[in-house]
Image (cartoon, rainbow, N blue to C red):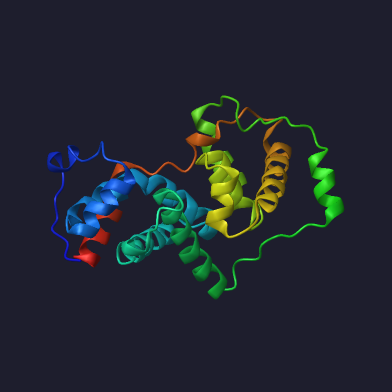
Length: 224
């Protein structure tokens, strides 16, 4: 597919279309509309990549490659899952491949006894309480310290708001694994943060406009 760059107000009239409608138009030849998809999902894709890589610059590299990969495989998108889930899965796959290649990723595993113990823990969720903006960096640091496997689940479920099923699809694990890892990640963060302040998870790892523009421009240059 050839890319004809269109941006700014020219794209505004397309933003009301669903992801699936835009994908269909891109496949049919309106390739410039791919920018709408990138800008719509940049923050989620960034958070997903960073949850694995734990490095902002490399997460951007992962994003760019994920978008390029998705673009050249758009015809394989069969709508069995949401486009956002399909795209996030591609980003996580790219991030995991890089992390594992460098020997930097070791997903945690638990015994049945440990899983049952987690399920019996109190269901306090301090990560959902209001918190002051200056504590955001503290939360991000705490999330970075979560073990591989727990970190991605927390980011997808609590920060990006994906369902258990969507998270399982993105990570290629069962829903039971997602539930267990989410409970573990909550417990770990609770121990680190509950005595300091309430936390509002969706305020973390924001993807600011300049970085959004940089990723979009890089992808358009690559696929163009």
